[in-house]
Image 1 (cartoon, each protein chain N blue to C red):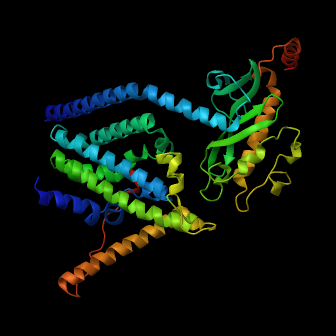
Image 2: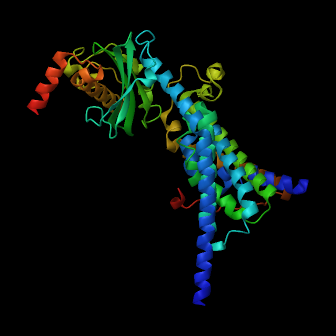
Image 3: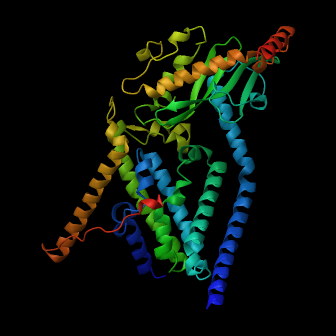
Amino acid sequence: MRRTIAKASLLTALNLLFFAVIGTALLAITYQLTHDPIAHSEEIEKLKLIAQIAPAGSYDNDIIRDTMQLAPDALLGNDDTTPAYLGRINGRPSIVVMQAIAPDGYGGKIHMVIAVRRDGRIAGVRVVSDQETPGLGDYIEIAKSRWINGFDGKSLGNPDDSGWKVKKDGGSFDYMAGATISPRAVVKAVHNALQYFAQHRDTLLQIRGHAAEQAEKDKGENQ
Amino acid sequence: MTSQEFRDIFYNGVWKQNTGLVQLLGLCPILAVSSSVVNAVSLGLATALVMTLSGAAIAPIRQLVPNEARIPVFILIIAVLVTIVQFTMNAYMYKLYLVLGIFIPLIVTNCIVLARIESFASKNPMLDSALDGLAMGLGLTAVLAVLGGIREIFGHGTLLSGIDMVFGEAAKSWVFTVIPGYHGFLLAILPPGAFITLGMLIAAKNWLNLRAERKLKGANATIVPIEGGCSPAMH
């Protein structure tokens, strides 16, 4: 009796294993076949997004290949190393496209990309993914409203720190009645990203002058 | 398969045992994606495809799977098929994938897929099972289309918004503004709106059934209450 139970269990287990192996093989084959087309279409989509926020003429290089890795930083809100894209004109860095995450959206994290020009002005911001309430907080998406364009041309000094809030909190950014949490989170994250840009400007723009090295050394000694 | 069987399976899937209105299985994705027609129909069709494929894949191997291990094996096969569909969409229908991407993996957990496998494909030949999956999936798609249409009209005042995500920029002009200058009715877009609309659709279907039955048998016919539903643990 015990032997037959053991035998039945073994057969069941082998059966499961058999289907698991077949399933894994099928998935591995599909993955191999679709890997390149997926990477290709993702790249095209990424480039389209970058083209939306970094206007034509603000770079002339193959921006998608000119990447650097940004380590996790509280100001960017990223938990993992995320890529940033560097646009150049005649080889001189002109614009940086960074990813930032607002951790405090109404429905969780709001993922954004932000393009900052060399002079610290914002070229554009887009929300890449969010779970804000449809019809209420989702006007932060460009598909739903032009609200996100309100950041264009803004920088750390314009408005000053107290202005980097929604109007309800005494700042200078618009919001829609009934949904202040989503724009509040976005404004804060964009402001943080600008601060990150200011702190890491030399690294991001690859300024390797004597002054920059000196500044880095000073910073190292102060820590 | 005779044409009578063919018709029975089809009628059963699309109307009599409709997953959205009668079996009430897989409500989670129904409520989540039915805020617009395009989303609703797209996910409905993806589900129909997975149901057809899984019916066709599981029926031929049904004798090979021991009874105790059938649920894990079925889920494994469904999950593999869903992932293959997901990869393929990602590679060759990228725009559509961007819209539906997060819902596609959820098809695995949609208990209607497993329910049809368990109650039909594990007992019937391959062609019947594939057809059953297709008919059930199309029935679900039809309910999703109506639900999405009603919610979109009441919620946004439009119809077919987002169609450009499926057919490209040129399709932008297909969007239909039903009520111009409409500011939207939030309840219709939020999940409660889905519940209320679905309730009305079920009532409408029951009324139609009752009327048909009365015509057939005279005025004394009564409605058979709907049974079943999906255990919450499945979602």
